[in-house]
Length: 86
Length: 172
Image 1 (cartoon, rainbow over the protein chains, first blue to last red):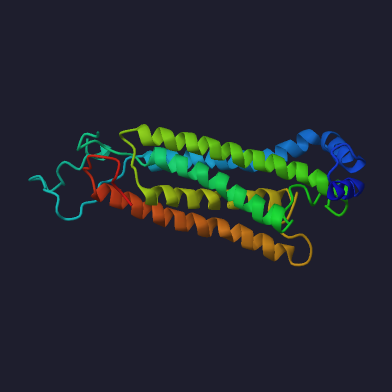
Image 2: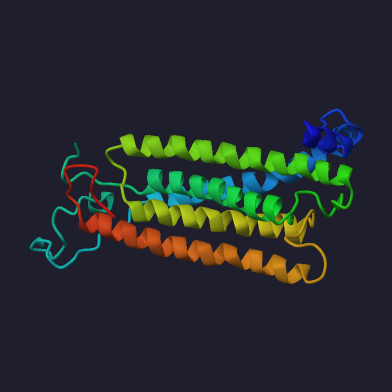
């Protein structure tokens, strides 16, 4: 109780006290849209890059062999299963 | 159960790992830098947190940043679940971990370039030596990305060499 009263007195734990109200007012009044764009832009750019990386990593790649795979008479590994083999 | 000669793609697992890395890396940034050290506040170059009102204002924006990282993490969990259900997806702990580390680095790189260098809305540690802190943060991006790529590449090679596998227990 005493701690709560102390915090309230210091305007730290009081959601309706002037600093909190003023901060909320500033949040809505101080270029809200512009700041939202700024806050979101790193996420948007990163997600676009993630899409590119996923597409690139999903692309078929030549199958590596560990030397034990059976080879066809033409010399290519048999039954590697990658889309590149098709 | 997978067919033995079925081609597998790392795409779904890499996508999930990247999203989880962005989200969890963002949480690491938010918890360590924003909250514990009280640096790196979202709009601290525009409204320096030198008064209680300015601190609370920055705190609201830090909260929105955390909302973003929470959302990305939630999407990552969904993608991981979906990758786990796909028979054609590579299933490897190394690929997942590598993608997560890479995602963290990717976000650090983009965030460092955009917010610190181009827009200048905040700095890692404002004040004396802020450029050094910003560059350190920026460099952590490519370093983590290279580490993640090495881990994921090794994991994919292992997963390929362990094929065919009858169950999901393959890969490290």
